[in-house]
Figure 1 (cartoon, one colour):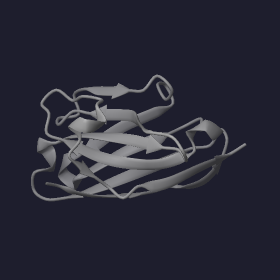
Figure 2 (tube, one colour; figure 1 turned 90 degrees about the horizontal axis):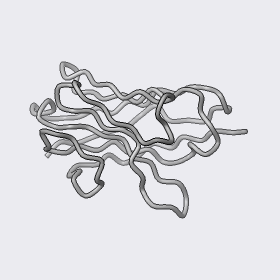
Figure 3 (spheres, rainbow, N blue to C red; figure 1 turned 120 degrees about the vertical axis):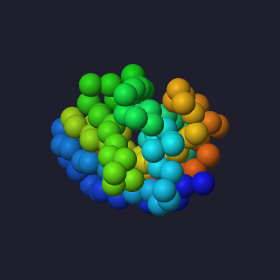
Figure 4 (spheres, rainbow, N blue to C red; figure 1 turned 45 degrees about the vertical axis):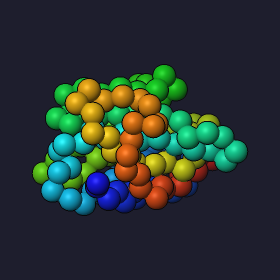
Length: 124
């Protein structure tokens, strides 16, 4: 399995931007599709975005489409989530996750490795 560590969370005003980073350990990072999920207090963990192993395909939740961009750098074992036009409803703990799927899915159960999460708070 791959070990994941997120960073880049923080407090930002509505309309602002943040970039989350997920650093992976291990030599097989390029074998994994990578995703981001988020969980607000008292709510379930929800899908945000996923990127395929070669970065050829990306998928987004409707709620973030057009505002968030997922990308990866396989040479650096890193995946990013650029978040623009942030809204208070984006406030959550954001988790990085990995799955061994050739065609990436948005299903939480398909992700086998998870980071510890990073808090994002958007003030109005």
